[in-house]
Length: 420
Ligand code: F0G
Image (cartoon, rainbow, N blue to C red; front, side, top):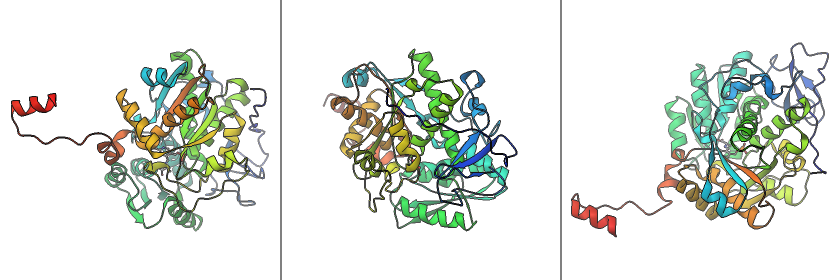
């Protein structure tokens, strides 16, 4: 733990800022007022922005339930809410003993209102929209962001446009975006190309962008980390040594780190208690793993990507400048898993009663691999993030096991089929 370098959060308020919240460029440090105008990146250098606060909370400042329990760490007292957060931390005794760690818990973010962690970001992000007064919201998505934006945008009475890579989004997610009333545009390109296009439209002022390049989304998502710490203390008796998560655009990786840095800065969390943030990518879409393995300072875009875990089929993770320090600064690591390993882990979780979509199972597949390589020690308490629920991807689930049998409607035939 000695070489752990948690970057500071530098919360000295710039004199130009009126309230107690502002935006800071993570590259050049330029600061901006949060709601005077629409801004996604630094106007001077193009760097990613981070939300900063004059006052950082300790655990005593948290009260209530769900994302807004953590309002003392957020830019508002309340957001556009459908009661997101407060997701369960499940035990998985068989996987725990089979993998061979002291304790293993699954943080099931699929238990959010639209079935993924994206709701934590949207409850804050769509609240910002009300502050800015824009009317048309948009995102590029591998599916879950679109489902969540459709629900939260619609709840706020706003127009929602979603750009999806045609044929590469799980059926349940398209159904959600459709039912919640979003305009769905399926493009003959991958997620990264969808994001390039929607970013251009956002820069031209046509739409307000709610992908995770939007720093307010990450504010909501950092509450996953706060919940993991509080639940762990209560249910396991200590903080996790490590959090393992599936990584696509690397928003969660960045958000967890931001939350932990804030707790360290306020004195609520000791540096040595910050869990190691450990990123898992699919073999066919692994630019972050490539950068970590080669000790690169920048992530190279993968022009073509492929994996059955369609949610993380991403070759140009926009949050990588925030995610690389998160992995390195906490002493974590990044590895790939194959689609076969992902689907096997999905089945293992299902056998413990926990239904997740394929991308979510990457965290458990990654844990298994890291443990077998000796990177994860047997004394560790590990939390694996399950990012989305099983029902989002019925195709992947239906073909995971034996096909259902068709038999005549008689007691004898049913009994025979049971015994066969
Ligand atoms: N797991 C699931 C189920 C996801 O939907 C995503 C991202 C991730 C993991 C990766 O999270 O981007 O924070 O590293 N889905 C986005 C979407 C890209 O459009 O729904 P990340």
